[in-house]
Length: 98
Ligand SMILES: [Zn+2]
Image (cartoon, rainbow, N blue to C red; front, side):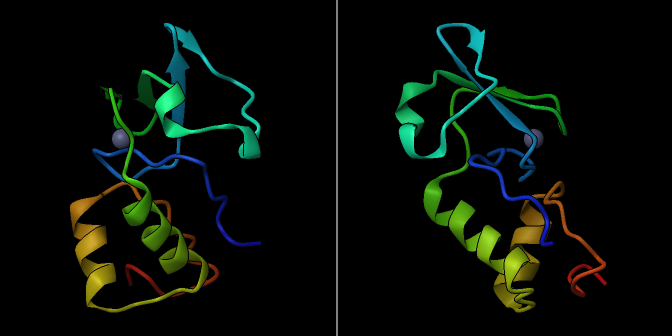
């Protein structure tokens, strides 16, 4: 199994351990097909502790998810790993970060 891919990533550290809030309430169960990023007003990251009013933009998140799933290890990967220290990388399935 690849590393779990979250719907959101932290815009600060890249972690997928992000809990969205809507109207001040934690949103625990999220239906994948039923959400849009704009429905949430803040995002709490369990990895870095930040509460942000936005999560990582979709283009970057998709690029990072693809990088993890496909174990892409190129210059762009190195940039992402430098920019976002808490991207969860499963060392058992690929060699990123080695
Ligand atoms: Zn974070």
